[in-house]
Image 1 (tube, rainbow, N blue to C red):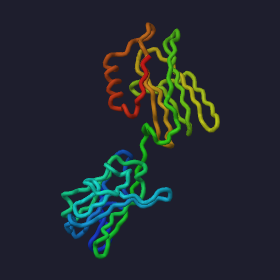
Image 2 (tube, rainbow, N blue to C red; image 1 turned 30 degrees about the vertical axis):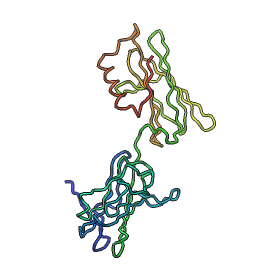
Image 3 (cartoon, one colour; image 1 turned 30 degrees about the horizontal axis):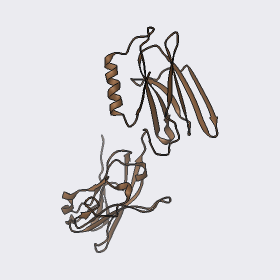
Length: 266
């Protein structure tokens, strides 16, 4: 039997945090940071201020400020750049004392402590929430990732086609050839070398079927993954790709364009 326990953490007689003091979410999801007055006093004309606590390598951030109807989403200035367009409040809930906010499309940089502050209440009220954003495996364009985009080539053989993929980067990437269904192909040859702290990997796999394939490079320690698709044309020694598989591939490319933007047709 599953039992769920909801706890209200009392700050004082007029203020409480509805929910856990530590909130955990996956990167890319939306998260609500709760903050409410236990008196359910109307705060439409009040001021409340959400800040991100200064980190040792970064200063304090302005997340969301509400002041009697004015806020960062209707012209009020001062919001930190990284939160612009991602934070909103619950306008209809203000009359019930609810100052909670939503942060959309959470990022790893959102990790840290947050404060919800009512500086004009007597006495002033502040409480803390810790937000933990867990990284997910994805293509991290522009995030100082050192893995290269897989470079893929094909070579016709007597028995079919030989696929070759070259990748380099640090930390050491795991490299695989996969078909459109995600099945890992058996490698013909794997070459790994290291120069000046960078790993250089070449992976080959033999195929006999006209199909869509991709070379996938994964760096789990930094949650980075990138791939390059390639289409192998039909040869007399192998069966052709069914039209439904071409449609499936086109849908994969459309849906995952930002994650797998590089498609080669050979």
